[in-house]
Amino acid sequence: MRVVYLAAGAGGMYCGSCLRDNRLAATLIAQGRDVHLWPMYTPLKVDEPVVGERRVRFGGINVFLQQFAGVFRVTPGVLDRMFDSTVLLNLAGRAASGTRAEKLGPLTVSVLAGEEGRQKKELAKLVSDLRTLKPDIVNLPNLMFLGQARSIRNELGCKVFCTLSGEDLFLDALPEPHRGRCFDLIRERSADVDAFIAVTHYFAEHCVAHFHLPSERMHVVPMGIHGNDYATTQPVPDEPFTIGYFARICPEKGLDRLADAFIALRRDGRNCRLRIGGYLGKLDRNYLADVLHKLHAAGVAHNVEHAGELDRAGKIKFLQSLHVLSVPTVYREAKGFYILEAMAAGAPVVQPAHGSFPELIEATGGGVCYDPEDTDALTATIAQLMDHRETRKAYADKGRQAVLNDFTAEKMADATWTLYESVPRDA
Image (cartoon, rainbow, N blue to C red; front, side, top):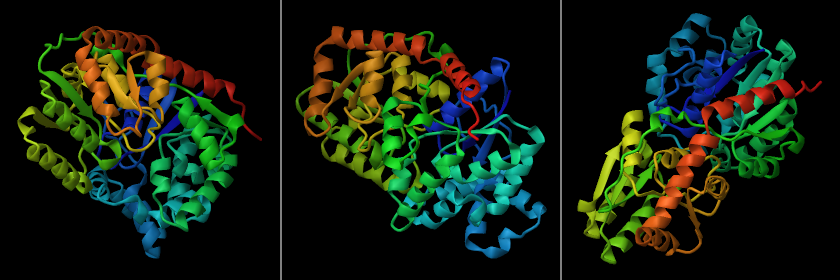
């Protein structure tokens, strides 16, 4: 069985979906499976070796130009290939990271319209490239690519799967009438997909209700990490108590809420420090500046470190330096890949009781959830862990053991392949 796994690049930033997709493909390939990973829109940026092709399909520059200028819908292939160069796409990706979702409504509608949209030339090129490989399965990266499913199934006769990756946050931010049109197209085009794969039961149920996806085609394959790099841990000194944040730095992830909790802990006389790491996009630089200014105004800036964007070795070292990790998201997180990594590194987590977090924490025992409606709950929960070392150690040990045993890349790959084999092609 041959699988082509399509993975959407995130415009030059690390993202949990890219990390998961690349690790899944790498593990399947290492198991001897016939899997080909193709990046879409922009090149993938991950902290492990990329196992996919260098060439990008459905390149973001061509997609954008074909949306806004009719001449680019009939340009020759040589010009298209120039726009699909890795250098240009990386530059475009960094520029696009400064674009809010609400400005991308017409383009999103057009891509979801598939062969009826303005990017039909890109879709035809993708199908032509796929035809040379004769895949048995094509795995789409998220719901925004459902417009490709019909042409792929009809012209190649293969099964089509679609991974769900937290796209509700983007789609819900689109203005009307584009949001409503996207939801209509998703309902219509979901009939062209043989199976949907969510990484948590929470998000599977949410997508069935929110996007009206067919529940009988919904499946859950838990995330898995490459645990070899987490095989050893370093003991963390008891003081100062180190609170960590490691995720994309943006308002949605709630760094400002953690900053407020940290200020309250310091004002209570507690010996603690805050370490901040993760990707920072151009649009969110002012947000980080505001958070750091708040910490400075509170007189605690000397206890705060901004480590910036880290490579894999730096990330693991960062996580292993923490007594606790908290990413107090404002929205309901679909995945939470970063909390599995923190647990593997031996850091218990403190997360709001919404989205995927209760499910992951219950499955691992690697932390505690707090009531996100209680403004003091995050501070109080971290304080309790500071005061109860043995409880904190129990969370750390349980979480680490559970992730390294149950949330492995091998189990993720095995479950995915079993699903690929078991789902019949819908006529």
